[in-house]
Length: 273
Image (cartoon, rainbow, N blue to C red):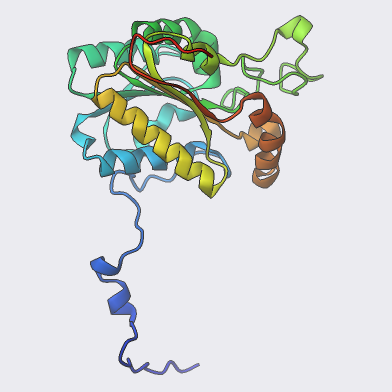
C-alpha cells in the first residue's frame, strides 16, 4: 500500500511535534539501565526497582545513594539501577548498610531484601539495626515464599499455603505461624516510618511511591530507620499466572498483611501497634 504524505493543518501535531521535549508525557528514568530484567513475568520486583530509580533521580541523590543487595531474587539489583551498590551475605544487609551509613553519614543508604532473607536468616540483623535506629531505608519484599531457591516455606508463608517444603500446606503446629515482622519492627523505638504497601494496581504503585519518597526523605533528614514492606506476588513460586497471582494476593496475602502506615514519628518514639 502506498503511503501518502499527510499535510499538517493549523492546530494539529505531526510526529516531530510529538517528539519535542516540551511535549513529552513520560519517559524511562535515566537511572534504569538497559539490562534485560531476569525477574519472572508478573513479578513485583521490577515495579519496585522502577519506583526507586525514579525517586532517586527526581530527588537528585544519585551520587549520594548506596544500595545493599543480599542473597535472593533481588541479588542482581545492581544490574538495573545506576547507583553504587554493595552485595551482602544472606541476611546481613542491615549490618553492611550500618557500616556504610556510619562511615558516610551524608549518604542515602538502603537495603533491598526479600522475606526469606530479612525475616529468616536475617531476623536478628534487621531487629537490632532497627532497634539502634540506623539511618537507613529498608525495602522489604514480602511474597510469602523463597522465590529463588525452589519455592520453600518462608517465615511469612500463610497458614495452609502449599510450598516445596509444605506440600500439604503450612501447619502451624509443625511450622509455627506466619510472621508479621513489619508489625514487630514498628514497635522498635529506632524506627521512624514503618508502612506496608503493594504494587499490583496503578493506585497501589502511586501509594507505594509516595511511601518510599517519604521514607527516603526521612533518611536524608536523619530521623532513624525507615521500613517499607511491599506485599508482592511470586507467580512462579505460587504456580499461578500473573493475573491469578494478583487475585490470590488480594484474597489471601493482603487480608493477613493489611496495607497502610503503622508508624510515622521520629527516632526514639514508641508505636502503639
